[in-house]
Image (cartoon, rainbow, N blue to C red; front, side, top):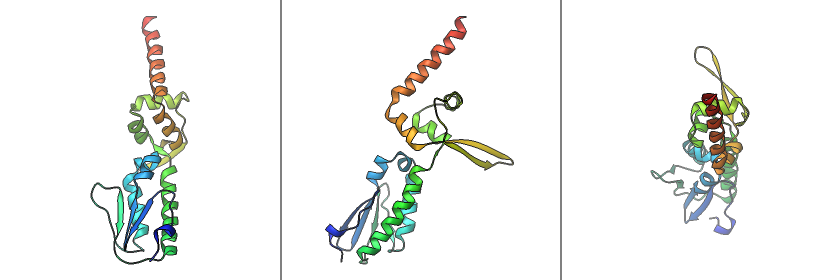
Length: 173
């Protein structure tokens, strides 16, 4: 059995062990990473897929934890699994956000997002191509930029105020 002081660490998950039960908590990563917080289910599925190599993991409804009961995996096995989970969660955390996720996260309309993207206030990180009979290019946005705007709502308010003043000038003239 691995002692708690030598329990391997994860960049994203908090790991706790009591007897033969190991608990993997997502609370910290969901709070610290906007990309993971918006993709909670995907993050849980990714971790669960890797944890299945240690044994069956259960996830209590509504909880931010995965619980691995029974068994006594060696510390190096847990460390290997945690490294793989960290690698997968990192990919999810930094993957660019879709336009719909940006609108939902920032509380903006599709029209505002489109306008701000076109005039350069809201920087695109790239495009995703999808097929709907033909190829359609969808804008994607960097998680770091959206996180910055989420933490500074005054920027969005200023953009809206500026847009309102600009539209108001057209009506008065």
